[in-house]
Length: 391
Image (cartoon, rainbow, N blue to C red):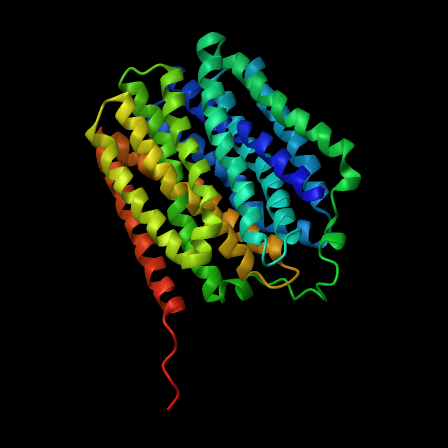
């Protein structure tokens, strides 16, 4: 079944996508990089995807999702190998944008395929399954990287991370006839509308999905950036840091199991409002403890919140897209995600360097989560409140 294949391969590929970013951070810190340099690395990771995500979505809509899958996995594998042969901070600045670009191609194609291969009744459930694969990668990726660094080295860890997308790429080639092209996936969708991004931005549902996703991605970026730095400053081993990061992924896995029944009862926007409020509480807690156990507990709570934020914003963006433009809608959401990668890490890196502390950064992020919750609280209220009777 094509959908099962897509979901399985995505789950495996996410191990590298999540683990490689933790590996990049820890290796950069090991090489002497500070918060500002690490923030720039994260910004470079999102630069090319931010600029090219919408173009990738249009390619998926008009030509073939498989084209993005081939280029994405193949190039991603090659770029992961480079730091093994050239282990330096300069090389990380070269490969970071390549990782972002190549992984984005894969994500656009797979997210779009999950959507178009689902019916209106099964779409929320199938996107939840997709997100469960991502949360599995959020657990296994950081833990695998931490163990690999402590048992082998940073350099060897890059080879381990590269082997995973290489295997996925081979599977795509072998099963290419089982993966539908765009025309087959969207048969019967009718003639395509003119490709004008302003048309999509004019839709209130799309604007809300993009703003909500911006808040979610800000939280994810700051957690992925500053939790390893915070743990390193406390003297934790790479394995301990990986386990703390893995606690986030474990919670994300659990909460995504609850998305279909909860969203069916309360709606996607109401659930998203609650998730962001829970995330705000977790960010308030991080600077208040130096215990690895308590930090893992706070990361778990954050995973419960942000873990369902990503799939919910993904569902909202896909549903907001007109027929024949689903990949473009998905890619607009991804452009916002990668735009956050470009802006948020260096901006907060400057703040972190200037103030010499992490607590204000976590608390600022808590305020952003609260604002996102308020936006969706209003949207949920408008959706659930019946219109006034006609006079």
